[in-house]
Image 1 (cartoon, one colour):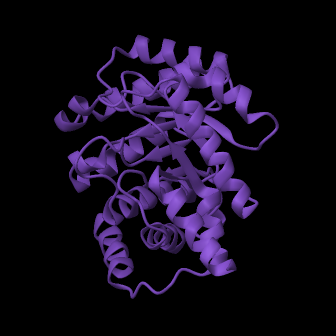
Image 2 (cartoon, helix red, strand yellow; image 1 turned 30 degrees about the vertical axis):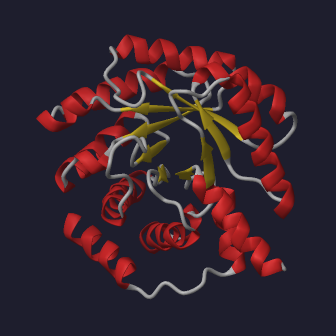
Length: 271
């Protein structure tokens, strides 16, 4: 399976990257989790960031999938969102390290949901990953997911710190534990998303779908800044999982710069 994933990633990475079609640029915008996760974020900076993002969306008459912030900003996002179909995603559980007691992760996740978050992004315990304690990871995810009422749970693996076998096993553990999405990276380490990691994760999702008929979402994040890069991930996931995954219910791209860069490409097309 890992060999297949590597071949799939290599095929996409070696393919010639031509100009991304307008229809695909718009699709990429619809998949974006627009993110602000800076240690120095504060109310004024988040309000400006939201206002700027709304202006960006108006310029192309469409919107991205979600805002992604720290939980303290949920009330601001709820007030600003009004009736827009934008989800509110928050990071919980001592992001970006993930080194919090399971009960703390549960309590922060459920509190964030009660405050109005639609999606909860948590980081696995990377120490458990390195020692191969995949059952611990699965159990923790199961407990967090079981405590949530309706919010989707997105599990961040930090694939840049893991080898191929660990990525595959943790993908399976997260899926068994009840993750709604598996996600590459926090964006806080040197190596973010990679085509190879996303291919391995996609094959783990495919195995689960083939066995159960249940679709699990996937989210490349960390270092994806250009629409050309984003389009490669779209092509990769589609090649493994099919067109049915290329929507914001099952596929997200975590980014801060990608939105601005992609919108500019759309405006260039329309000029």
